[in-house]
Length: 292
Image (tube, rainbow, N blue to C red; front, top):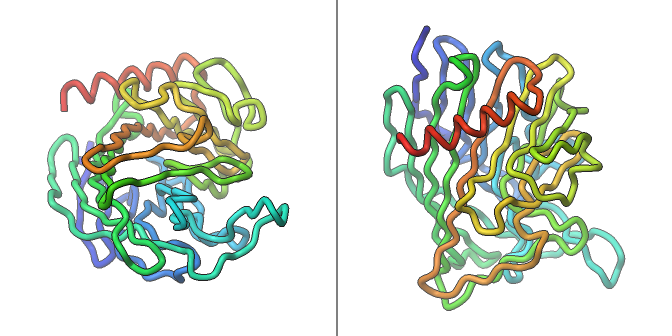
């Protein structure tokens, strides 16, 4: 079995499984300011080469595969697209409101049984003034007796000034780590750790993990670490979207010197997984973190 290989490129880095591309991380993509440019993974593939992600779809161009999106950070939109304006009862673009999650540098890119990447970023407001510093750490390995991939995604966010106020969308309340799925995951079947099925039932509910199964049988499981604030996290789910809704319970305020540390896992497999199998992958994720 070929080892996973990390390869740096002009956009960021790639993860390969032999000759198969697993994922591309776009850290330096130049995108319109109205999309609130942010590093992202797109495309992402299952071990057999099935496409999971959708990148900049026509309906929501600011959805860029797997990404961190924060809607209201003070007066700055770090999600992209229009804002929900309560006084107008709908979404509208707000001029000069879009910020950037700017990639600054990779501080580590390690090969090995588990690939490791560390990244530093700066959140900028519409005037390109720093709002926060962020450090991300990614690890990529195998799971399920080498039948899939297991990722860990850790981030630490710290204000630049005296206070950072993180608010969710005024309507849907989304914000956090989000996976926009495309064919054959465009009408994914969702299941969570509490036994709830379907994106409508899971939307707004707390759970340790949520899985999504594509039409061709591939599956992903997104996982929330027990050490996270507001664990088990509330989820934001639609038929083509899977994400944490960290701010659904309310806003978060970080004062100078404080940090918001978040840890999430992602399992990617070639076939549909049931509840027991998803729970086993969650246990494998927690066990892997103890070793790494």
